[in-house]
Length: 337
Image (cartoon, rainbow, N blue to C red):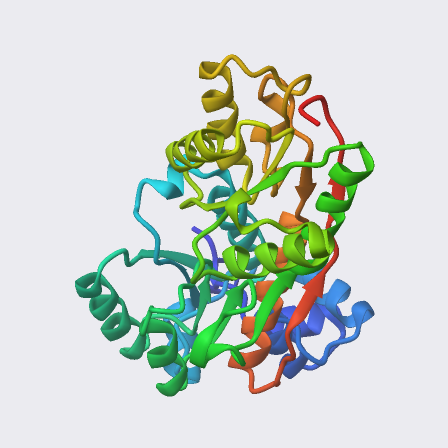
């Protein structure tokens, strides 16, 4: 029969003794690693491995008043979680970043007013420590409600409207759109159209601003249509553009999925890509590289976006203020343009 000592579960103090640090340092590593040197963190992580220590999350929750979980909140229609690869990329990255800290990600989808009210009640009840809001619309009241309730919240993209000051992780939307527009102009295209995202979203607003700024006096509002970041909307937008401007020689879609829809419409109209019309997208979420033809696009740093969001929300939970972060993008040239 095993002795009581040998069957006893290792504690934080056991880990601290093996690592040669205080039990407070071990606690800080387990709870997110704030204010711990790289050397101490490495020693604690090795001690956790050798002692096979497992945190008692229930006890820690009672002691700290924290749940040990973060919400991944999507306020778009549920089917987009599976049809739009950017959401699965962000979800995977956030899950991995939290797992490194022995924390859990909770997926919440609130695509209606009733569901948003339910999510607000759930979050306010303390079931999660913070929220990663991966989509936002100016008309959504949920973001403002979470902030007013003191819930640690971080957004992807610069939120618009009253919640514009909420901590966020974004790419340089305006600069990225200018870069793609300039590339198409440098290729000799003169009638460049834009399929923009919804006007009440960060991408819809700022990518249009960059497109217009780069074209300057050449900007023609008749060459702009809005879509909903879905393939069918890109198809419909391209169809409308061709009806009133058949001389278009390039189109910049504000997402790869809308670019795919635009190409479908061009093929129906017997317009070749890129020989007759060059097509460019935005995101480089995996779809761009596998589509035929492969899409010229703007690459967003998805892994860095999600890991930075996790770092930011955990800092806010710990009482450490954070400023917005803007990350660079990359122009990726492929066959479609």
